[in-house]
Image (cartoon, rainbow, N blue to C red; front, top):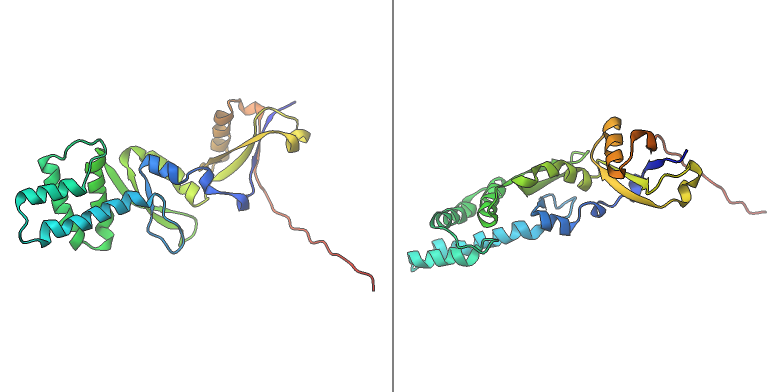
Length: 231
């Protein structure tokens, strides 16, 4: 009987960019970074644009003795622009002014909290920050994200640190001996329980559990072959 086959892929060939790349992070307004020793930054402009605005505005707001109140308001309006193009309110101008001063004086561990407050004003939705982890002690990244994307973070964590599972799935039901020639597509999941994985695969394919065969890697074998020359 022909069935759908979902085969776990070789983890050595995994490329996280197939499932969450720079463009996706930009679209979602998500930044990940801070561990430059081991990982490259994702969507760096989201965070660094705010840092530059905070640092550049500080001089005009607090270092100029001749700056009037109107000057200060215009400085904030110049460096901080709402995504929806609306004008900043008086309370938002006051908040951004204070955040500029706080950022100049804060410790590194408090930077992302201030940056999230700025992003909340500019994007009109609450931003949060935290740390995501891989399977090793050195596998970590700081992350900034809109509250509306919070449910997406565990999946992004699994993608960036390759702690999930990638499957190669036949597009149509086939016999087992037809697998090598079958047309496949790939999908990735952060689920780890076998029952959850099978339910997820059935949903991805649109089939019943009886129509699906799931093949997970259970072992790895290495073979050594020798060449010989006559003497």
